[in-house]
Each structure stands twice: as C-alpha cells, then as structure tokens.
Image 1 (spheres, protein in one colour):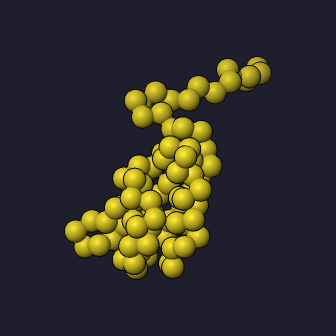
Image 2 (spheres, rainbow, N blue to C red):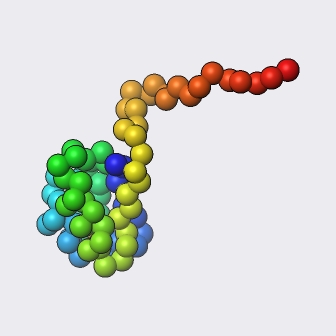
Length: 83
Ligand code: SF4
C-alpha cells in the first residue's frame, strides 16, 4: 500500500489526522501531510476509512509492492530482445 495526499484540494478538515495519526499530519497551514506513505498492514483498514471519509477525495492509495527506499530498483525479467 502506498498512500499519498493532495494538499491543493485538502479542505483542512483534519478527519484523516484524527483517524490515523500514525499516517497523516497537518502542515503549518493545516493541509494534509503524509507521515508514513507505507503504513503497517494493521493500519490498512483505518487508512481506507480515511480515504472514504475525506470530504474532498484528497487521499489516494495505490496497491503496489513496497517501494524500495534505498535507491535499489526492482529488477525486472532479463531482456528477451530477439535479434
Ligand atoms: S480528511 Fe481530506 S480534507 Fe480532511 S485533512 Fe485529510 S486530506 Fe484534508
């Protein structure tokens, strides 16, 4: 799970922050900030509730494998280029 949020559409309602403070916070202007883009699996349901509860649909979740954080890319299959 990868969580992102759009500050430009955030209505500063704080609902997501109250719901999942481990994942969401607010900047000095009150707009949403994602503290943890890859939340623990136990927080999954709460994050999805925050997505559904956001009045401006500013929170987005992608279902994807854990993104590497050390710069190491995910190796794909060897090239199968034929000549
Ligand atoms: S619930 Fe939506 S509108 Fe409210 S603070 Fe979070 S992202 Fe912004």
